[in-house]
Image 1 (cartoon, rainbow, N blue to C red):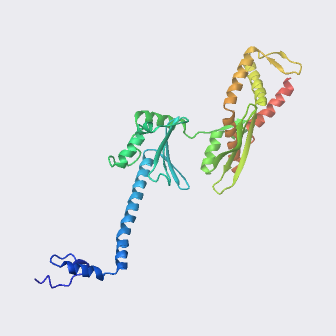
Image 2 (image 1 turned 90 degrees about the vertical axis):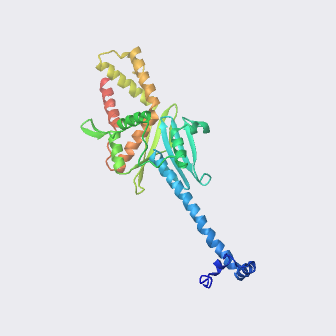
Image 3 (image 1 turned 45 degrees about the horizontal axis):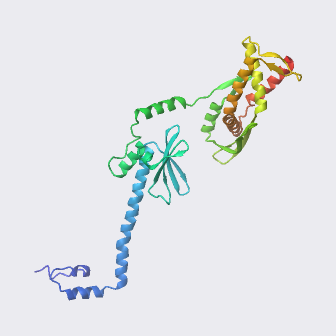
Length: 319
């Protein structure tokens, strides 16, 4: 017919019904080997790139899924971590790196690592693998929370509302730590606890660095010497009991130091033990406050410094 008389491309002639096998061989032999190799490369390469692209898009979708169910993203070098705190002492996460390009789940209950079976029972892990299998869709926003999670969120929202105030010290006002932290957040100041922050049986020491976005930083150090802190607490206990019209002192020793009553000793000792429990955290907070104020050129004298001076004056006139 007329169709048979039309010229056909060389690559099509080899598959026309009725052509002899000899012609097929001839046509194949006419194609240079270099062209065949090139055709194979051109045919296979797009397929390989397409698979890589599909894998990359799938990972991006899975990572976005983690974000939308409440995981926080952290990047460092070639590692990406998604972390979520389920309870105060329970954390789970997914890590992507060269060894685990498709991600690896991990978890901690306090300081104890979670086992595989325990991880599989976590609701977030079940949701992730259901999404990977295509059983559930990408949520438009964070997935609905369970009643227990909702209760935790309500407490967090109520507890962590920005707060802070100015308070009067002597004849002027100063900002408390909460207000200073708000100022630091507005200025995008970051805080970092530095070495040698430590607590021993004799003292608690904190060194904190405050850094502006341009790299300028200031370090501040706070040291609580426990012997000094104990004397301060004793004096405060005496003052408090005198205001309550109670008897805190039953005499004085050879060096003129007050001998406390049983009740005063108990109250002072109780306050001192509580102070030691939070001494390092208190030192970190105060050091961070000082560093932020110095960076903002809004430094106030520390209330403790003013209070110490006032106490010294009182003690001189009282004893």
